[in-house]
Amino acid sequence: MQATRLRRRAVRAGIAAAVLAAGLVAATSAGATTYSWTAAMDGAQQCASHLPCDPDGSGTAAITADTAANRVCGTFTWANVAAPVGFGHIHEGAYGQPENIGFTINLFGPPTSTAGFPSGTSGCAIVPGTVITEMARWPGQFLATIHNTQYAGGAIRGQLGTTTLRLCDLVKLCPKPPVP
Image (tube, rainbow, N blue to C red):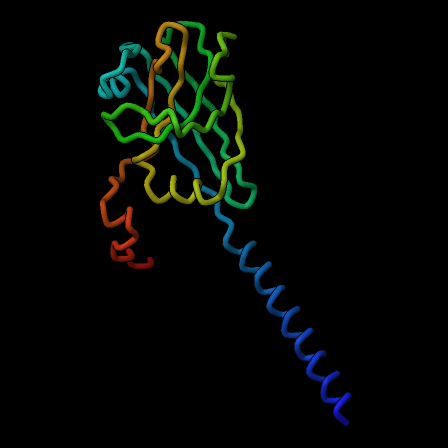
């Protein structure tokens, strides 16, 4: 009798564990999100950060991100930028502020490249899903930029969005926005 009760408990515990595990897998898959941004890049935005810039340069960065694949991809186009363009990436940085070079998502070209990529170059990088979520939450704190040999600090750049970061966001105390 005692052995039968123990077996039933073990079976129930096994079923409960299987249901819990299935729920966790479903929650993880269901939480995957994709995002996209289009950043209008130009020399004026780079100049506003008090760094050397290509004042006549312009371009676009079409960025996509997927938290399930932990992947960020981008296609960069540009015009009136002195050749050769060596690399393009995303940095953390607010409008009018220098980029944080400690935060770089490199999407094409190694940082030392002088290869001369053509306009329309695309690339991808593996990025933690938590970083992608932060980019989606505060797109105004991230920028796309391209670098060339003439403007090694960045020829042109553009913000991924216009949101501003508030102190309460940093300490996670801001009121939650209403759900649409």
